[in-house]
Length: 300
Length: 227
Image (tube, rainbow over all chains, first blue to last red; front, side, top):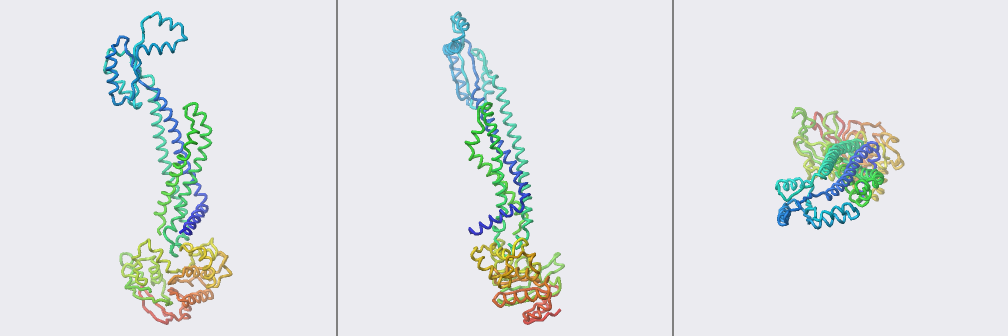
């Protein structure tokens, strides 16, 4: 058993070298596919991080008129809290709003003076509403507007709306584009590897016929070709990681500035995961292609 | 040991036949030569023994085993009982004589120790110990065929099936190859051989089956080449 395995491995390596140039084509195309997969994982991470950061900053602010009675404000708060999309409602009373304003502008003597002259608190109470997800703000906003409640002075929502929508659609577009590119690359990988293994089978035709005649088991004949497919996957996975490494190393500080996420740190911290995903997909691609070629061209 | 029971192989929906209603038996330790013109069906018979070809009608048995009912996955085990020799040698050109023989043992799952022990013995049996490390293109036709025979016997099969083993050889090489096959037979292995060579048959003085048009026309225990 061990002897057979060792011989299968040896035959696999020999076959790999014997078809070195065609093997290169397979490795190249699988590497490109894996590189795109790896890059997509990293870009997704960046865009996802910046989206959630942006989302964390977003809320709906409702400003009440200064004469709004407390009971009506409470009633509105309770009705908003009852909405399923709402995650959190933060209430700021008139006095708190004033205190906040004073704290913020304590160095601005003109503003302080103006405030003192007014005697009365010019600020209304406010609530800040947080939704579960970015897409839900629209409906919460609509709900508030439809109330036409006279105690509402102003609803501030549109500020961040556009940038969020834009980012969400960028993420969608990136995911779709990389999905299409991936499908094309995966098909190319499978086809090219399929042909590489087919060529390897033809090259070894005599050996295969002799192996059959002397009663070699099916696994003994097929094993080396399957191993070749697996080798393409492993080598391509390692190559893809080697190409990604300097790129993320270079991009790391730049992304840290721009997205507030250091992509290099992410790459290093999640290296095992990225490694397993890339090698796993590479091995699967190689193995599937070689099994297809074997079942098609290697009648044992 | 091998038993053909009313075996036919038909082509074109039954209009032409490679062999027709063939029935015969090969006993253990026999040396059987099958003779006949090209297209008489000799090679088809051999292919059926090694399960490369299947009969349209009838059955072929190896001992009590119906050869063509062996499932594909069990076929390798069956083929290990048979050593095959061909007219065109079928040696691997980039392997030496020794490696060609060892290759058959490796494919059979034999251990390295067994290989190191048995390959030199097989080479000695075919009298090629001094050419062990020569590549096929450094060997004469007769030497190549002897390597092929060594490869066929190295896994100690029950039967040797040789399809025109002397077809490409000059008279001296032919004589040597036949002597080796006879020696193998004397050591207890059944041999089935097809041939065109009258001299070989007459010299052997063993059983001869003569085929013509896909049928057996003669079966003599100590036959001469008659066509």
